[in-house]
Amino acid sequence: MYSSADGWQHAFRGIPAHPAGISSSRIELRVQAIGFASRGWPVVPGTYLQDGEWVDAERASGAEPVPVLADWAPDPQIAPDRAASWWVERPYSLLVATGSKLDALQVDAELGRSAAAVLRELGFPVPIVATPLGSWFFLVAGGSGAVDEPGVRWHASGSWVPMPPTAYPHGSVHWRVKPEVCGWRLPEAEFVLDALRAAGTRNDPHVVELVAPSR
Image 1 (tube, rainbow, N blue to C red):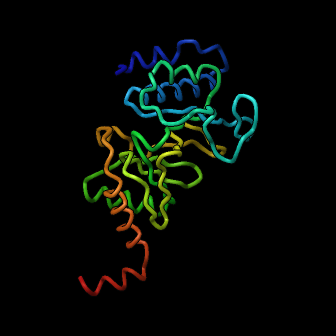
Image 2 (cartoon, helix red, strand yellow):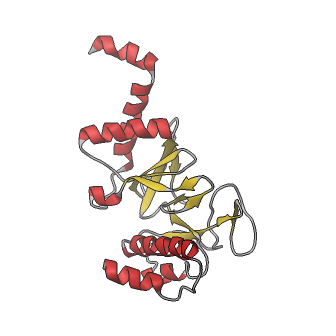
Image 3 (cartoon, one colour):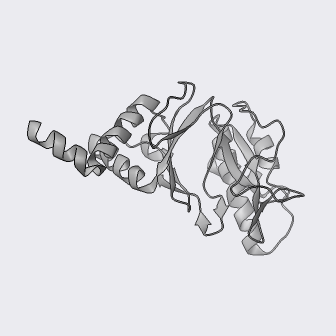
């Protein structure tokens, strides 16, 4: 695994001179990509913002970042050096492919805040990523298989999630709970689903009225 000093050394290597704001953004993305790859998270370069549009090297594409590689399928064996090489020329969005090392449960900000509070009360914080569009992603162990759950979008095989510090038109992807808080351990999906269900019950006044008398 790379030390922080090694990470910065690899991040600077091969980056051409550009205005400070441009290069610093790309360097930060590169450093994060190295860190994720060193832990086996399958990083993928994604389309990035240019003049308000998501673009890759040649064309505009979509309303949110998507992989720029044709063969972007999850590969937990991506070496940190290879991951670093993708951010030499352009500030690609930083994506992590789901379905192998990790999955993600996507919810809206209201449910996300409530579920985070439930997990905090239980004393079991989990890594949470939020986007400027109001989506919260709870990162969980991969490979458990997606299930249908109201209000939850399960990102498993064939999908991906944006990671900090990917830029959006009105802000950047950021951590609500950093993975260091829980030692980079990912919980089982069912555990987080239980927290989401409990949070949904708290947010529904009709459910509260029904269950309160029986306590």
